[in-house]
Image (cartoon, rainbow, N blue to C red; front, side):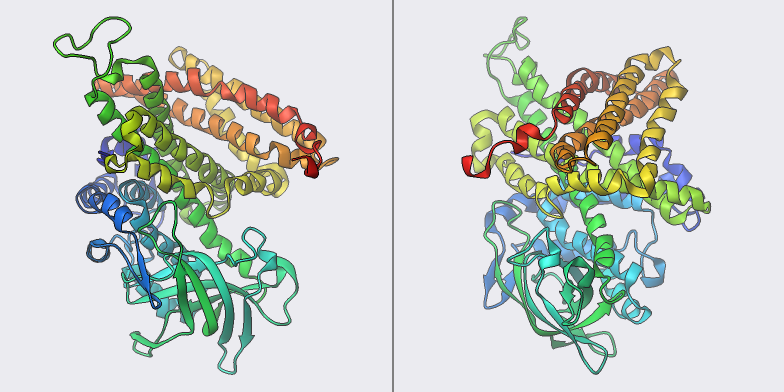
Length: 595
């Protein structure tokens, strides 16, 4: 069976020893976010995840959501679990106290996201999307909209969605046809069809707030003519309670490969009443607030799936007896040895372990950067932190979800034939993981975003900030004999990144296909290098822990895993650099009709 226990020790190690989360309490507004407070919150979340959410993961997958006459029902136990989630204040953790939130740092939210998604990805999407809607409204909504809707999103009595995709357009939103017509009362009448709307209809909350992209009749073509509207399922009364039913309804739910306990809906708008969020024809910047939050959230889904896959694979490998160790029996009194003694099983486990531990560090670092970008009193430091977040967002979304899928498949492989059987639980992880590489922008789109938008951003300044962080670390630790085995490979990998980027600068201007051909390889090259940077930072903390003489086995395991990553995973950067320099010719040479 699949297993999950919240990795509190590892999370606390990263927060306290690798990143020094205590620095957050020095930022304005975060004075109460002390390490002790954060640890207490994580411990309570762990209980919820282990005792409530994870037990519903498989049953929710088996039952799925049901649709009848426009009504969607979530699987047995989900409503009770959501009520517990909401009443426990988990929807309000990082929200503004002005609207009833707890005002805790985004870093805490990232740690919670990992646990929520690891224990039950389908469930976590309901409050996860609501928080994205909260972010978009808080940044771009009018004061009136904020007053009416943000307290309800904060306390979880209302949930949120984002409605972008239409039957004929997904990534190319400039083609969307949903129309919005101005009304005399200042609202808009919105008509159209949206598809693939996660949590578009359900029975968990009393109201659902849809953020809908639409176009006015006289709007410019393409994405420059798109506006964003808030369309509630029920129109609120003056006292804040739900009123009349709005003209937005679920027409069907999709029958999917995975995340079956989350309703993926077709939403039909027939003169639905909506209110403008932000400026007319400026809907994309407003929606990107939600999309960027969602992309990081999906990246955390990849990490969460990888963690559950790893834990399940380890538990099975320790228990399953099969064959004998190549170096002699390790379980002499038994009929066979546990499969964890076999090198190839170790390979699969170490790939998962070395990914999850560095990915956790990278994601929590991004959480701290978001907090700095939001709250640091120094404007230059806020800008620098935001640049790093912008650079790392497509990397986290794409690489984490690629690896989440890979780790889920490795868990199945570790189980062998038993992994392919539904009752053992790990095949669900494969199915659930697959969507993460597709929604919120496919991973190919993330790669194009990295190459086409993020690398040139601010004249390359944002990219230089990220590379500069690594260069500064290398300079600071290069003379440390204990760190030499980690720092030198990082330096070489960083050189490959710089070499690849230079190649693109020289060739993509002449032939834009060069950027497209290199995008996915460059994203992975940068991801592997960023992960190695985090393993270096983990190694520094591990050496300090060893010097203090506490829990030597824990810190030694960190160094051993770091060595595996550098010896067995990082070498991919060499081949990726060669692939990038191979150029676009071999991809584009074959005529379309020859495929």
